[in-house]
Length: 561
Image (cartoon, rainbow, N blue to C red; front, side, top):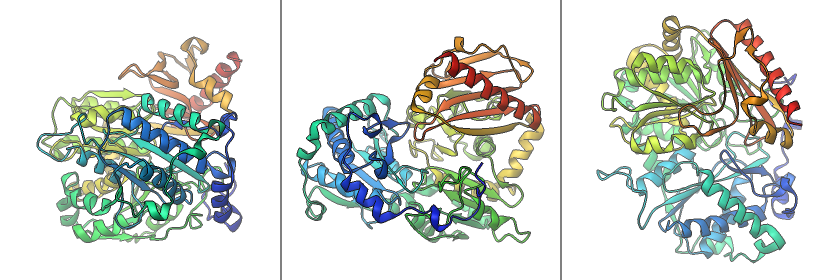
């Protein structure tokens, strides 16, 4: 834990934006260096221009690879593209536009010249492919749309990110990302990226291939199809929304105006250095709205006994994550909020949802969700980390709600149709207000009632630095490499490297007992590995589980040497 975690950023914490942008154009990656190649993690290629990991060459090569991939797949409709507020997002957009225009791809850019939250882009793809029509979503045939989101999500200000969303509107699966990354690295090799056809940006943006699309107007207008705005208005729920300097910054004001909500944008500032942020656990500026350190400013709004809001919210840089703060409970643990939201939505709030549809959760989300599902009489499907696993079910309506422990989720429209197939932090924040207005109880109070009936749990997530070799080793662990037979005094009942819900590899390890579990997996975006743990016994028992987890992981990594 950094000594200044949760305190305001200081001048020495801020990036030099001009130097970073210079690095974007000046540094040229060496494809022979693994750290400088295109690598798609759980959500796109990420890196910093200062590390020669996110530079003009990477974006030229990756965009060219996407052009080839979509052509091979027969995706010949519009390509929607949007950016977040990271400093590298703007130049990466310009580079991509130069390549796309030269390839005569039919591109849709933000009509306002602003920022585009990930859920707004996902929704645009789905609508273009028929999600809002009576005939339903098309996944094949001519004219299919897809998209690119230029964002590293919650990563620090020095980073950039580039993500491909195919016609289903959600994160691309490994069949697509592996091909795109491999082809991009081929284009990088030998300097071939310099010969990719491009049109200078000033001319490209005026070409017939690049056309405007009003992402914000379309998204904001459709929100009543997924959120009960009447419940928020009639309950006079007071909302304080902090976009944390991210892509949702203009969206919240538009939502308040169009839907006549008692909503205040508490921080309308955009700063690519994020100088107004509080430091995260490790002393870095990181827009993780589930972190109590990052959310220090939002929490402070509600800690006064005369808090001006009933609900305060935060989003990360591309608004695919949510942070919920209540007057009575403070910043909610993401798992607590997921459990409360799932209970509310399936307890009469969405009567048109199918009774046989499943609830989706990642295997590192709280087991309280399993207990809520059992109480509701619904199947809970446990999948590996990564929102892509929820995409098929959300598209078909077979999954009503898909949620991740890292404060990312989406759910169906009120009629039971697909809303987004990528995470939507905006609707999860609005849902907290709907829950408060419809029930008279905050999400914290709803969670407390669940705990009284189903048992209290204690949950934690710990991050530890890791080398790439250690991350690769952890990703490939087998149950036989875990020699322990008990965990924090309880017999181990399962050692999982495949998810129970779909049998897919978890990219790590999960160990369970009767009253506790832990999971360990490498980060797909940073040089750390994560340990998740939960206990239904006590806070002290959770500490024992976490300590035992560290030992089990260390022994397993050691045995693999």
